[in-house]
Image (cartoon, rainbow, N blue to C red):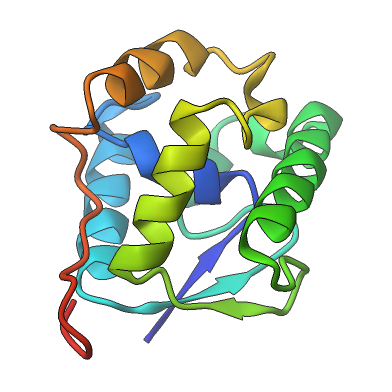
Length: 147
């Protein structure tokens, strides 16, 4: 299967430790983290994705806000530059161990953080990065073909 992600969630997954907007959101994100860790491919989408799904039942889901669309644009620019590959809607991405390590190193160094400036989770993510990502839920094996 394929996981549908919007661009800024490529950054969020780096520091995801099981905290979120609601119990339903967190339970869903835990499942997405498991799937990513097993090696499922990512399909980049515009707008709400597999992570956002539980928020769509809210009266005014923030995932539809223009500020979130801008966050996607900034994240796509940063990640595309870092990985030297297309981070556009419709592109596929295999988040293997090497790519995750590279993205986490760049995140810790502040090189892929433009999208994070106005995010309410920014401080938590900074703390997790400073702690070496030890409690994060998205992991990949370094072995080829293993997730």
